[in-house]
Length: 416
Image 1 (spheres, one colour):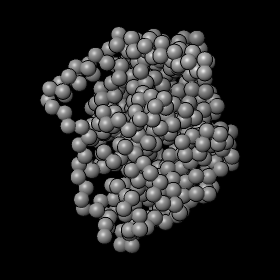
Image 2 (tube, helix red, strand yellow):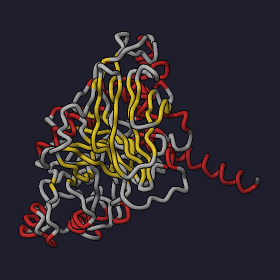
Image 3 (cartoon, one colour):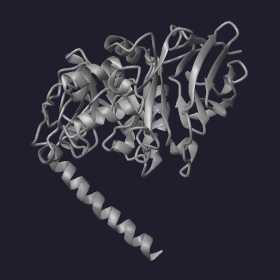
Image 4 (cartoon, helix red, strand yellow):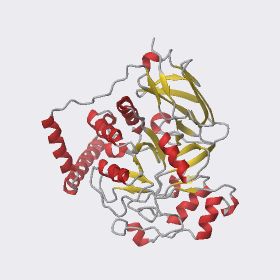
C-alpha cells in the first residue's frame, strides 16, 4: 500500500488570523504598450478592490507610483502619443493607506517590477520583481533563460509569463506535451530557484488556454528534482476591461512588500480566473463572487487533504494532468493508483475557477525525471539551433511563414 509524505505549501498559514489579499502582479500602462495612463490604471485597480499591485511595463522598472516612469520611447509608441502621468505624493500616500476615496484599506505598491524582453516579436516574456535588471533592454528572441539569469543575479524573483502563447499550444495542445518544450522550461526552473514558476492563468485565457496542461507537465518533471513550481494568475492588463479577469488571492499576515515577497517564494496564494475556458467552457460567463479557499488541512497520519472554501459548487483534485477525485476531502490511499508525485485542488463556481499550488506527495520511490536522452553531439546541434532562433532575422522569416500558413488555412476554411 502506497503511503505519502505530504509537503503542504500552506502548512504555515494561520487561517484564523492571516488575511486574504486580492493581487495582480502583471500590469501595463502608457509607460509601455497600453493606452491606459499609468496613474489611471493604478486608480482603476484600487477602485476594483485590489490590495496588492505590481506595475510591470515592458522594459520599464516601476520605482514607485508617485515617480515618473522611465519609459523607453523607442520600444513604446503608446508612450510617445500619450506620455504617462503618475500619482501625486498626496494621491500615492492616500492609496497606500486607504484614505483615497475613503476606501478603508490601502493597496500595496509592489515596486521594482518589470516585464523583460521588451522588443521581441516572440512572446518570450519574463516578469521580474524586486530587481534592477532589464530597464530599456531590447532582449533576445526566444530567450527565457537570459532574462531569468539577469533577474537572479540582481537578487530578484522571476515568473515566466504566458508560456502557452509562446508555445502556441492554443493552436495545437500537443505543444504543451512535447518533451523538448517541457525540458526547456524544466531546466530553467531547476537551475534558478529564484524563478518561482509560470503564469497558468492570464487575462481571458484565449492564447493561454492550455497553460494548466503545461503546468501539470512541468510539475511532474520538476518536483522529483526537489522543488515545486508555483502557478501564477494575472490579468496582464492592457485595457481597463482586463482588470478583473485573472488575479490571485494571497494569504498573508500583512501586505508589506517583503511579506508579499515571502508569500511569492512560499506559494501561499491561490490563482483565480473568471475565464478558464478549458475547465469552465468557452461559453462560461462568470457571475458574482469568485471562489477561493479559506482553510486547508493536510493530515499525513490519516493520509488525507481537506479543503474549505467559499463561492464554489465543485472541488476537483488533479494529478498528472487528470482529475482523479472530487469532494472537499481527498483520501490519498483510496486515490493512490492515480496519484503521481503531486496533487492540486481546484474550485469551480459561478464566479470562476480557483487553483491551489501543488502538494508534493512522496511515496519513497520518487526519482528524477529524464525527459530526453540526447548524445553530446545532438545537444551541441540544439545549442546552435537555439542561437539561430535567438536572432530577429530567423523570427521574421518564421512569422512570414506562419502568416502564409494562416492565409492558406483561411482559404481552405472558406472553400469548405
